[in-house]
Amino acid sequence: MTEQLTQDRTETPGPLGRSRNFLLMWSGQTVSEVGTRISAVAVPLLAADVLDASVFQVSLLTALAWLPYLVFSLPAGMLADRVDQRRLMIGCDLGRAALLLSVPVVALVGQLTLAYLYAVVGLSGVLTVAFTVAYRSLLPALVPAGDLTSANARLEVSENLAQLAGPSAGGVLVGLLGAARTFVADAVSFLASAVTLLLVRHRPAPRVAGRVPVRAALTEGLGFIRRQRILALVLACTATSNFFAMAERAIEVPYLLRVLHAGPFTIGLLFSLGSVGGLLASLLAGRVTGLLGGARTIWVAMAAPGPLYLLMPLARPGWGALLYGVGTAAFAANAVLFNVAAMSYRQRVTPARLLGRVNAAFLWICYGLIPLGALLGGTLGSHLGLRPALLVCVLGMWSAALFVVCSPLRRMRDFPVA
Image 1 (tube, rainbow, N blue to C red):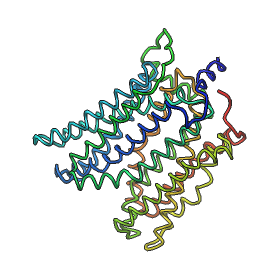
Image 2: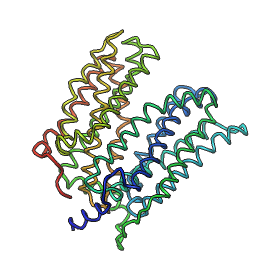
Image 3: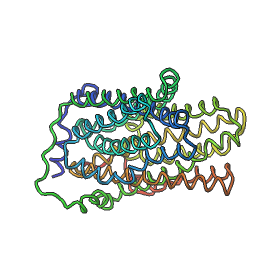
Image 4: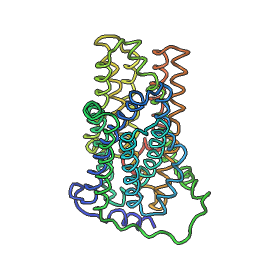
């Protein structure tokens, strides 16, 4: 059974750069990532400047963008394992494009309200969850198993480039076109992604005739993770890191403003420095993994950069604020290297019929903790002060490495055969 599974996943020969299917999917995903970052600027600006939303009302937009991961991840995994994943992704792209295009149309006729914007953000979030689960599950069917690390690294390059270019482009477009019309750019990016997926030549694997009951199917991915010790430890590591990272992000702007006395330009520069760290790591991920080995990269990437996180609470006003940027760059590099290696491991050891539900289980737990992490950061900042709270957060981020350092991965160089 395992030999057949490996053969099914490695039937596309040749270098990854010549894989038509992967290049199409990669290019479409790159364009849509940039569009998503543009919307991340346009949505709060539209709410605050055009619809006169309060601070709390704007924060609800962020909550609605993340809430679908907690509510719909497990059903999305079950859906992705039962339908053609490529068609599901195309449907999600078209649905998101239609929702975003409706915003400038509704604004043009003077009917745009905050409630309508909430609906668009929430429904788009549901489609984004389904798309994310499907595309992470489809990738192993499009590239050879030996190229999964390189493929995931290239997707990380796209995400980090989007983080660098998207917000700036969004600010320019909002200034030139207005916040509502800027939604057209994101809609076009989703249409471009749909077109590239239409051009992908992929025959879905035949589905098993018998169907698992819905209740069992929803939890089957979690059950598989529990039976795979390494996979369960990787999940615990990811969830812990996400939890404390979101606690840190909840207080980073107040910390930069009130403790480091940084202005808007300096804050933007420090954020960009962090993105550069992630971009460089994504460009070098293939070489690092080849040098260290896939299994070793997982725990080294989590453990080695940890001391640099301590530079964040040690930063001082003036030039000392650069220490904060170095710490965020180290964490971004860690996140990219870890994500590339851990995702490749997950895709190799999980049976194709379960991959959608396993990916969904990871999203459900790791992203579902995000609101709780943000709440912890705010609570610590209010009771301990911003600098001590930040120290607790970065120590928590580093402590996540214990799950993978104290695991069988420490005695392995490469991934086991699927």
